[in-house]
Length: 91
Image (tube, rainbow, N blue to C red; front, side, top):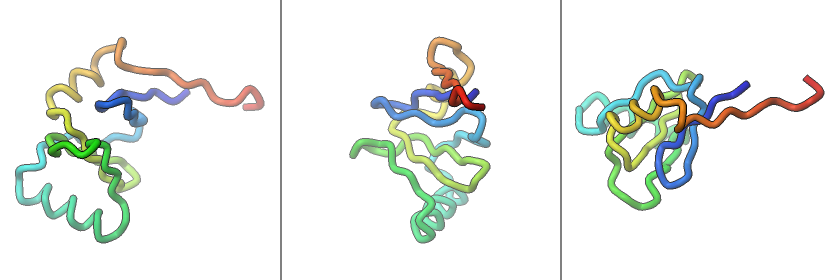
């Protein structure tokens, strides 16, 4: 069963696939974001707003969010922000 967390503006990520939630200000994170853009592994969920949080997945995709990392972290810890998706009935 997949668990999805709201990362702002109705955008959801699979909580089980996220490895880290970091601030975009550090130079190493900026390099990660730039490399992901060049390789087509970036998902922009900011809805045109300034990027305040960067989520890194185990599949090396990088998700940009307009929410602060602290806010996203609290949402990962809170059950009310998690949406559980059950698989198909055939499984």
